[in-house]
Amino acid sequence: MTRTPRRANGAATPERRPIRQGVLARSIAFNLRLAHNTALQAFARQLGRGYVRPGRFTILTLIAENPGISQTALGRASGLDISTLTPALDDLVRRGFIRRQRLPRNRRSYALTITPAGVAFHREMARAAMAFDRALARIVGAAEKRQLLRALQRIARAFDAVPN
Figure (tube, helix red, strand yellow):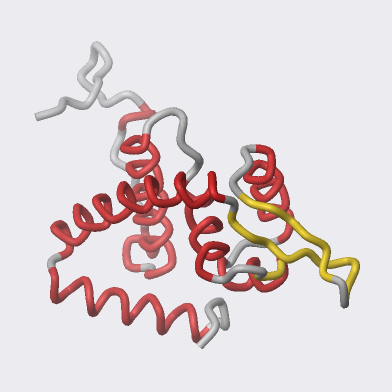
């Protein structure tokens, strides 16, 4: 059992007092954000140093599954805006995991492809991601996982974040 740090007079220190969440405690969006942030941090800890951030795994997966995807389509599919996506792509290009090629029909757009090094790295990351997903599934339960995924996908489609 962890103990809340206390002052000499027995009162909890301000940074350790329980935080009242008010309406946030019942907010789907707030609880999704907390679960998302917690899961990302736990996944990053599991991967350890030397790996890319969890968001990079998403990008690599979408490029691997959709060779030649444009940055615009990738942004839409991943839910990332251009200010987040561009530095991530720059990092993956620098690491030799993806290639950008200008599209002949639109010189302002790029086709993105995964390199052989990217395929090998992605395979390794996918094993870790699937192990982490199994850990999450144990927390949620198999039946609840299916329900949760359907609900999350409905939310994403309702706000047009994921292609149908």
